[in-house]
Amino acid sequence: MAKPIIEIEHLSKRYRIGAQREPYLSIRDTVVRRSEHLWNILRRKETVRHAQDDFWALKDISFSVQPGEAVGIIGRNGAGKSTLLKILSQITPPTDGSITMRGRVASLLEVGTGFHQELTGRENIFLNGTILGMTRAEIRKKFDEIVAFSEIGKFLDTPVKRYSSGMYVRLAFAVAAHLEPEILIVDEVLAVGDAGFQKKCLGKMGDVTKHGRTVLFVSHNMNAIQQLTQKCLYLESGQVQDFALTSKVVGEYLGATHREVKSAVVDLSDWQPRLGNNQAQILKLEILDVHDRPTTTLPMLGSVKFRLTCRFPKKCDASFGVFIHTSEEEPLLDLRNSDTTSTCQVYQGNVVVLATVTALSMYPGEYLVSPWIADFQCRKDLDWVQYCSRITILPPVFEDRILSLDPKWGRIYAESSWRITQ
Image 1 (cartoon, rainbow, N blue to C red):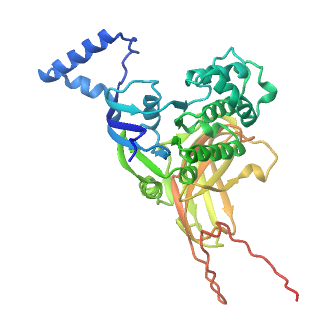
Image 2 (image 1 turned 90 degrees about the vertical axis):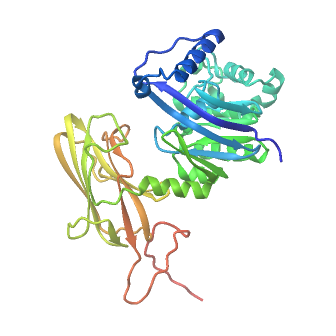
Image 3 (image 1 turned 180 degrees about the vertical axis):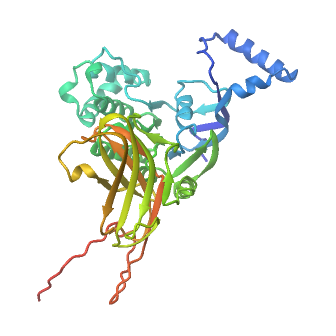
């Protein structure tokens, strides 16, 4: 069997909470500090205060990746995913452990990584390629493919400091994927791009693995993880929970993530995690049936109400909504009040919002609920609480027939009329 292209053994990364930025150290400084640290441990002089001030972003991680494998890395925010990629990309050093990388690495961790602001797109392609270890001839050979994939040909000779975040991502991904690295590392940065470009990038990463190269992919999109990767690393609080086939690991992650979200009345005043700019806050979510009784179990084609209690510290225009996702976190429905009114409203203080769906036509199954508030144009999030509750849709009951609905066929049911002639 071939040697692993990536070998991680007992990898750990420690940060000091509240500590000032450490200066860059020479090799001599590093050896002296490590020696003093070891001597203090042997003499049991490490103080309790130091232990309390330490934050271990990663703790004793070990795994290996074979050439040509696509590996997903999943976990909640703060689990250590991005820290792991930064160590593998040699952006930050580990505190302990060893890493063996048998191949050229290309990383796409955040918008504009490795680009020089004052240089044009054309110049940055050559600069980035050189950083990846490519010769000028190799870069020229791939140049036209990179430009075509990135779709920024019109702005190729414009300094990248004038690029939008989407244009940055297009060019950065095109360079990283087309210059044939043995190992391609991609973080959630692809979420910046539009839906069409994200699909294009996923297709390209699939092509990369077919040609025997290795991909490490961090994403909160479980659909993308399952579509692209064969194996998955699940991190929680800086430690490995599982490393196995993607289907198995994603099931464990979703089960652990959504195990607690069952209540029909949820206090959201201190709920974490949440997204937004603090201009508004959702204090409570209530899921009600047709008789205004709290419930998380609803009949298919039945009525449901979502009641939000919100607070606006200052005057602010707003749009209210509820996202419904599948249990795999795939977006399914986006209910919003701005679809039914063209008048911008301004709010201050406490506000109660009631949304009613008269016939919930989703297939039987479990679904995740995420209330949100945005500005009236829905361009920026004021507050968005993800997956804070869930609903279960029961199979339909009809007097004259039984509907057999398999989620593999679809997610939404609609009555239809048919006329057949012969």
